[in-house]
Amino acid sequence: MNRMTEHFTTVRGLRLAWFDSHPATGGARGDGSEGGAPVVLALHGHFGRGRNFAPLAAALAPRYRVIALEQRGHGHSDRGDGDFSQDAYVADAAAFLHGLGLGPVVVLGHSMGGVTAFRLAARHPGLVRALIVEEAGALNRRPEIPHPVLDVTGWPRRAPTLDALRRAIEAQGIPDASYFLESAVEHPDGWGLLFDCDDMMASQEALVGDWWPGWLGSACPALLIHGLDSFVLPTAMARQMAERRPGTVLRELAGCGHWVHDDAPAAFAATVREFLDTAAGA
Image (cartoon, rainbow, N blue to C red):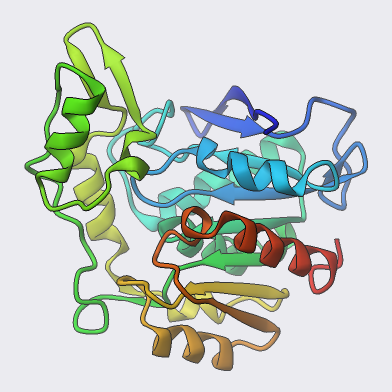
């Protein structure tokens, strides 16, 4: 699998990390491509990292260039002043694209990153040529979503080994900690996570709300990917989102939960590629 290279840039006073599936091949063009490869900006969800998209980038190579931004408070990116509002995430993404001289591009987002993606399209239509939204709802609150916030207040700060960190997280009621351990690193005093649990609580709380205006606020082609076993996005809501927004294609994947890209990476990549090759006009 091709490796994504890690880079750093300063965005709105923050040092943000980002991953790139293509080596530098020339200047950016107005069609969101670099060196002939259309660009896909990928935005991870809560607790995620930019490198979560490495399998997708490898599957789309060499036709598409995937740039994955590590959003504030995640991975190797700065947390800033503790503002984890959706507006802050959207402003970061817009400034990041402007800084690279890219746009319009295809923007793909998972979960929280999906909300950022469709709100970016609504607020900055000139930057987004098409949307791919994986498991992000237009309404994120009770009772529609039974558990909109994952309580991580009791999660361990450090553990003596990576395996011990896994066991400690899974002891909090997480069946499989693999997704979260993408953010695990070894510190001088043991293994810990790159994100701060208090920050993640604040960010999750900020995501609770009604995001229908953002979902309906853009006109570009959109692909909505939904795992039929998801505990986060109800199937009824996913279908309503597709019905209410013109130009939206809904793809439901059986046997997949909230992390479709991990549950069925080949099917996920094929679904994304089909959209990119057709509806996105890339």
